[in-house]
Length: 158
Image (cartoon, rainbow, N blue to C red; front, top):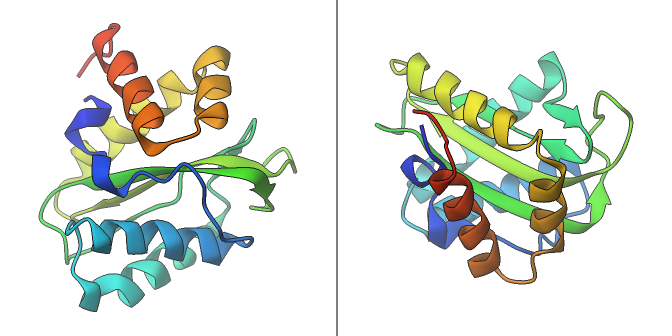
């Protein structure tokens, strides 16, 4: 699975304004509403579902990265977005470090395979230190999109 299979390009944010875990999840979810990928009426339910998932254990996986995600019946296909926080946000990450890179995923409950393949792709790409460094340094959403496209074209296996 490639980033282009699930990342909504018009929902990517190079500068989040939120300073809290729930704030960044809300801001990213709102960007998916603004991009027409999720319905405005489903926003609160999706934010609550992601926060409930966070209560089970932080999706801050370390090295300045978090992958908040949930399954939600309001979507009929996997959708996601990427955001960068220049200052970093306390996300109760496994390594205790602030998070700067966020990959948010919402998938239908009946498509667990897509959800897992997206998480695997994100995890694989984020092992590349230069990819992470370039994402954190991105100034505009189009810069992030170009980095994702480059990652897709360099051997990402579906």
